[in-house]
Image (cartoon, rainbow, N blue to C red; front, side, top):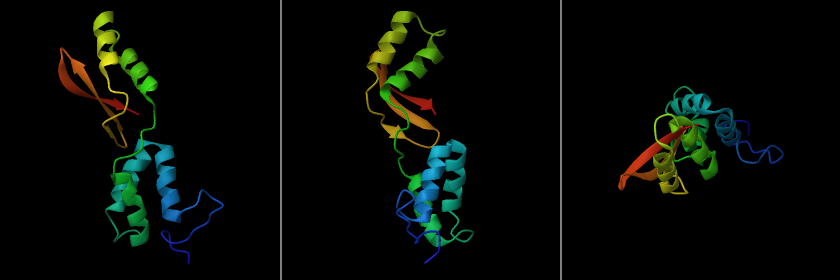
Length: 123
């Protein structure tokens, strides 16, 4: 069967064509993910089976960068705003695992002046 959502070809990463399209969108970046998220909500425009596969992009996504990368991004972005000790205290307060991950970025829990904060790091 050759519809987007039902054909399987184990030679190309397995899964349906729709699954492979969703995976490709993730690899291509946030603009493609957002586009596919919009398509997922339009089963009147694309085959319903493809829309179903693209719905996975609307769920919590797998983090695309690790904790060390997140710390590096924060240090780079905040080095001119915070004093060195404040920056180090903030960066080391971040939890290792993100509390959320989406097409645009990841969210980590940290602390500022002993108050919990959420920090979103763009991809």
